[in-house]
Image (cartoon, rainbow, N blue to C red; front, side, top):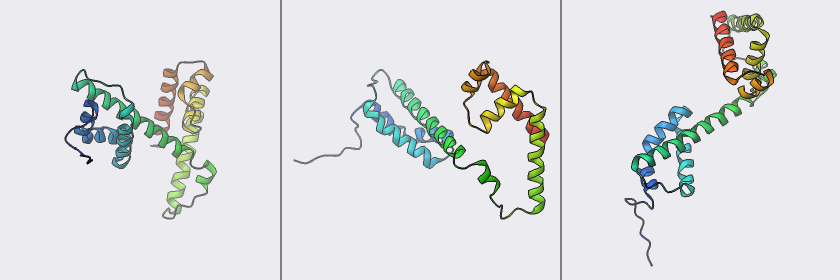
Length: 173
């Protein structure tokens, strides 16, 4: 008995659509992840999920939409996971104790002065806005959790964080 491997025909229409549009799927994922190598991983993860996917036989456009959504969701999950890992990879104290090998005394002074200006700028903000900004940016608390704690909408928390960021940029510029 001999097995024949065929690369021109795929088992399902969804798999065929995946194979034919793989490069587009990688481009979509790389826009979200910011890295082609990570995008390749995302597309590979999507491929392994195809056997569990529902059979979509209605139209080629529906199949592509489904594939794009799978890749998009996986890329966003990958990006969020990477951002969380970066956020929790070291403590603030560890970061302060790292010596910058190429930094001159002048550069170090400028950085410290900028940090002081930002701390002063945060002190100028309303208490609730400052709290929302610090919890989100420094402690990684989700906006919806901050909203529950403050008793406001997540949209308002988003605006408070944005306003605080704009204010800090204005002061440090």
